[in-house]
Image (cartoon, rainbow, N blue to C red; front, side, top):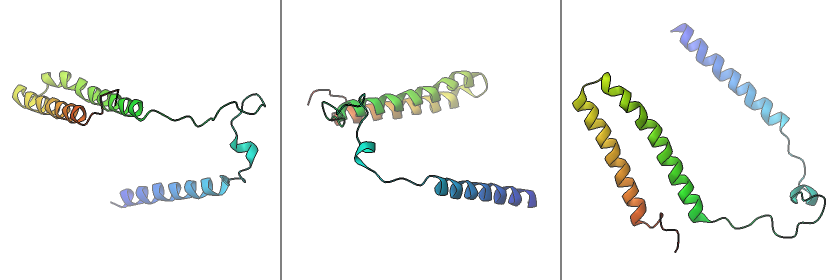
Length: 117
């Protein structure tokens, strides 16, 4: 128990020291006009550097990322068929896939997957 508490205290102290060192080192300088402008070969930019971003594209990208991570979660389930009871594996995997389908249906009904509004 003593070793466990000592390791937790050591980890906490090291992280606190690192956070204090980072806050001391990373002093921000004054924001002036030259630092705030985009770099375009020394010339003034022709258009705004802050172009509007399509929120629909952002939502599609987030949905893709979520389903991509969920596929990574599903892949080890194939290997688990050899190690567990087949009925419990089937119930777990099918419930996970049903949750994914319900989420996809919810996104579809809310119009997130519609590209044209």
